[in-house]
Length: 304
Ligand SMILES: [Zn+2]
Image 1: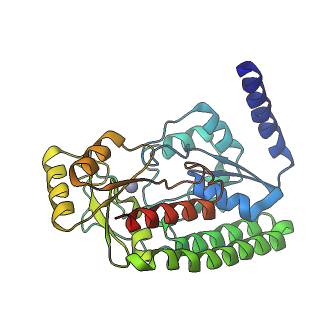
Image 2: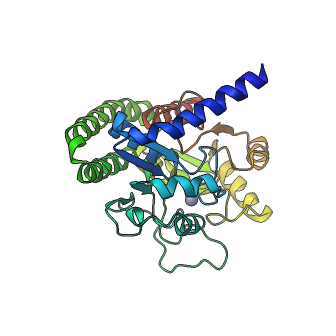
Image 3: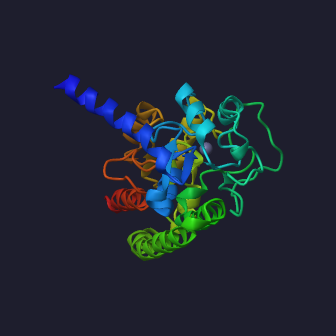
């Protein structure tokens, strides 16, 4: 049984590797939300590969030789920018030797261009391992930013593949209309909790919180990318108890034991969330992902 499954997995992988030859554009997304948008906008005209696994920390992605091959063949690379991929993308790009996706080339999409970033530090300080020195790179968790990025992707696809321009335009508009409809539901679902505080492991949910009226600015990490120290955790738990903050968000790659210990001590609720489509069950698309996160957070905030 297991052998059969492995065989089918290998067959499916080989097919996926063969299919791109027919695609008008071969696209690589650094993380899954960019790939999800590229598939939605490109439809059957594009083939899409993703470098990071949906359950992987986007600041620290394990490089594999297959990723260099995908980058070597790519017509388009979509990255978040704002130094999200600074620790792992440059060596992969060097290895790929592909001028089509070099910095500044028409095939290079930097999603953060045109986005107003939060948390831009007054002075960049990498000395302690801070991973947000160019501002907070988790802007795709504000759905209105996803619309800006969708437009950016549609523009670049159309310029590189004019024969597909009307399809890309139609698909981008359909995505934005679906997002607008969902936005009304999400806003209504979280409206009863306007102004409530939540705690998160890493400052991943700042844009999400701002969009939906939640204060997501208490973190288990003392600085982005720096593991929690016992004195810092003690301070956070004290704040949670003093201000009756009960909801703690944790992502697949973050140390769950630490988060569990915090909610056990403070009587809080732990909520499993993720930034990338596919990391939670039933979330193949970007809208599915946000939908699931909104439902889980609303349910936790409603819990007595
Ligand atoms: Zn981060």
